[in-house]
Length: 201
Image 1 (cartoon, rainbow, N blue to C red):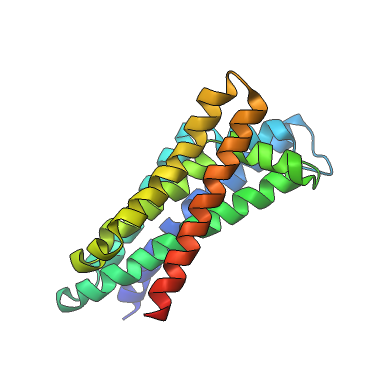
Image 2: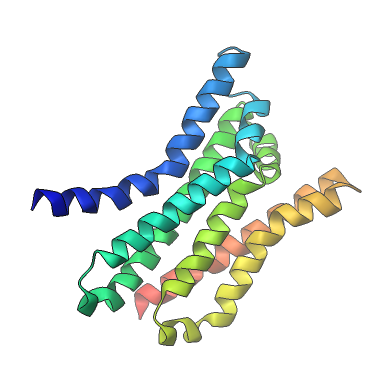
């Protein structure tokens, strides 16, 4: 019984890896430049633009999800896939919220600068977008077909945020940030309306 419970704790711990790794790395960088009242912009951008943190966090979450499913009774795995899809979407939403709050704190609680920092931090958007994409793939085939187009649009919008900022921002920084924020707002709106529609069914 204890061994089974311990195995069940491993996926949970793996789900925490991207958040714990980012927090530890941020604290290390923050301490190295000197602790201050607010998180330095350089620390926030270094953490959110680190491909190593992204890779470690993403694969840790995927490993946790796979373990969680494989530990389930084969007869119940179809239901477990749906539950795991919801778990990944909750992790994606948590990552977005924590990324936004960290940007706000890094910007000295200035909303305008916070939006700029948030959109500049590439993986703070890409990471949740990929989790949402994988969560859709976890759903039973019938459920995926019902909202396939909308789900694809949501993922494309999320992934388009950092690309828009990179490409358009090279020509005009403010236009790039504005378009990126608009894409993010539409993606979040579509995601929330999709979830509310699923819950009402």
